[in-house]
Length: 65
Image (cartoon, rainbow, N blue to C red):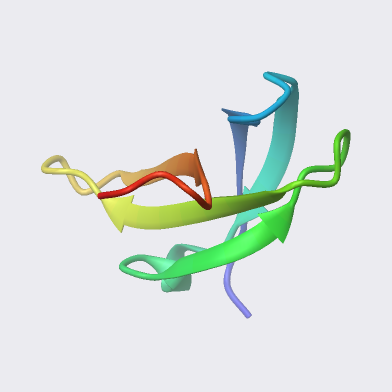
């Protein structure tokens, strides 16, 4: 197992700041995890930006692309 990167994201439902650990091997993947505060499902999108840095975006599961 490689190293994990700590990121701060904000719940799209309650707005609470959440500290999450992201595995760089998950780049290009999407997964759902419940908010640690309001328990609603958050859709995580893990990618790599143009500079090669890991990027994480979140949205509620009802948002369209």
